[in-house]
Structures are given as structure tokens and as C-alpha cells.
Amino acid sequence: MTSTDTRFRVGLLGHGTVGAAFAALLPQRADAVAGVTGLRPEIGGVLTRSQGDFDAILADSDLIVELIGGIEPARDYVLRAMRAGKHVVTANKQLLSQHGEELWACAREHGVQLRFEAAVAGVVPVIRVLQESLAAAHVERIHGIVNGTTNFILSEMARTGATYADALAEAQRLGYAEADPSEDVNGKDAAAKMAILARLAFDTPVHLDQVVYEGIEQIAPDDIEYARDLGLGLKLIGTAERVDGGLSVRVHPAFLYPGHPLASVNGPFNAVTVESDAITEITMSGPGAGGPQTASAVLGDVVSAMIPPASTPPTSGALEIVADVVSAFYLHLEVPDNPGVLARIAGVLGDHGISVKSVVQKGLGDNARLVMVVHAVLESRFFTALDELSGLGVLRTAPRAIRVIEEQFA
Picture (tube, rainbow, N blue to C red):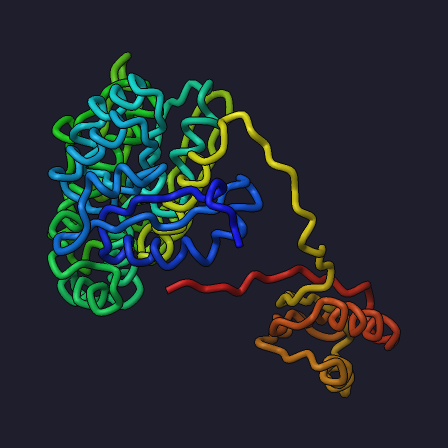
């Protein structure tokens, strides 16, 4: 039984998709959090439209998590919590993009933390990177795909040739778009997030009203088809950059060449690229939405608020290092084009339970090459098969193998 003096009580405001996911996640991870912080978090009270009393929850909480959304009463609750000396974690990008300076000033005045990693790009840790890892960097530009709904819609239009309306309907069916997706598809959601990122990266107050934005409602399949012929892909891009001694923050659809680090970010994923002379460029990507994903980012902020900023907890040593893992492989074999060679190679692979996904033959005669991709297999089994292939006496050179990452995300 955990003693009462090690409990860390979290007041939860809101119990929608993210709030419910956070309420379920916290007890699952409580033991792990206690191992890191020495405190065991638990839900001290939940406020919804039909239950709970804010004053009672505030009085009985060590930290407040605000997941109501919107401006009021969220703004009032956050300010009251910080004035009472309580740390606050929020995922409310509209609140921060419209009243951020007031909230941050209140946090400084009362010596509390206001954390908001989940407000931008879901589990992508861009807020923490800008606040901590790149705090001293002179950032020149940020590009971001910061709305998973629009990225899924554009990816679906490119993949299937669907119209905007059909792709939106599919996004709603899969839960990537709300019943009312207007703030996503018109660019306002992304604009709010870019206002927050710009404020952190460029040390300049940026209000949502100062962000120029447009959405994707007018994009037609022909736009994407013609661009594909030119090697271009379409994304809704948020940009914040230094321009002639000033700061530009904007959101709009943009074509990208394949070499751009955001060009390959598809589906409901988000990604942010930060450019600076000191670091050149770094790109962070991951799921940008979803109850469990956002709840995970919220929990990360809760843990950060529980640990003094300079604390580096010791490792627990509870996990063993695993050396032998499962992987798919690309396999390149230089062989003579003689009868029976392919059968002998296939026999060795089959004896070790290795299944071939695809294979092509390049060249003829003594210059023939077999290039194949095999399905995921335990690495030790694969390399044993490679040793046996090398001993067949039919390979002109040692086999070349490269791992293949096969994961695909809808």
C-alpha cells in the first residue's frame, strides 16, 4: 500500500476523448511514474459539465490537467489554478494562441509550471525540444505539418485520386476528422499551433490573429495528379521564419519536392522541421492526434512537472537488452545463370523458415544477380542461412544483406 504522503493528486478538467484516455492511462503508468519521481500520481477529481466542483478539485490537487478545450471557462480555471500555486498541464492550443502571454506571465508570477506539449503535434516532442534542447539556438525557420486531419485527406487524395469531399468522409469514418472539421480543413487549427511554435522559437509574442492561414477545401484531384507528374507532393504547411529582420508566420497548402524532409510524411502523422545555422536542420515526426497519443503527451508533461528541472533520475535496470530481433531483409546474390541455382538457394532459405516476398533477376550468364526481399524473420536464423548460402559454392561474391523496415501506418 502506498503511503498517503507519497500520493500526487491530479485534478482533471474535461473527460472527452483525450480526458478519458488520460484517466485510463494514468493508473496504468502510476507505478512507472512513482519509480521515476518517488510520487504516485492518481486522479484526485474530475470536472465535467455534469459533475465535479472546480474549487473542491483545486483544493485537493497538486496539479491541474486542463482538457476542456475552448477559451472559457478553461482560461479562468487555468489562471485560478496557477494563482493557487498549482502546476498546470494543458493541450489547449486555441487558449495558448489567444491568451498565451497572460498565462505565461501568471505562471512566472506565481512560480509554477505551465506545460503544453500536447497542444502541438501530439506526441512529437517539439515543444520540449524548442524550450530545452534548442533554447540557445538561433532558429531561422520552422516548417510544420501540424494537422493530422488535413495531412490524411491530402495523402488519401494522392493515393487514390479521391475528391476532397470523399477523402474527408473517409477521414471522418476512420476517426481522423471531427464531425465538424472546419477548424482543421480551413487552417485555423494549424495556425494556432504555429503561433505557439513561433512564440517559443523566436521569443516573440504571436497571437492567432497575426497568422495568415488558408485551408485545403479548394484542392482538386487534378492539382495533385499534375503535380505528381512533376515529382511534387502536396501538404498543408505551417511556416514561421525570419524575414528581413522580422517574423513571418503562415499556414497554406504547398507542393514539396521529394527531397524535402516533410515530403514523405503521410496519413495522420505530424512532423516539424527546425532550421538553424548551429544545427542545420532537424525533423521530428509522429502521430499528431488521437486520444491515447495525446494523453501520452499530457502524461509526459505531468511527469516533467513532478520532477525538479535539474533532476536526472537513476535508471531502474529493470529491462534486459535484447540482441536477437525480427527484421525483414533485402538480399543481393551474385550467381551464375545455371539450371538449379535458384532452386538450391530457395531450398536453403526454406530450410530456415525464410519466406521470399519478392525477387527479380538482373543480368544473364556469369553476370546474373538475384535481388530479393524476404519477410521478417529472426535475425539469427537469417544470418545462419546466409552462412549456408556462402558455402554452396555457387556465389561469385559474399551475399549482401540490408535490413528493411516494413512498418506501415494508416
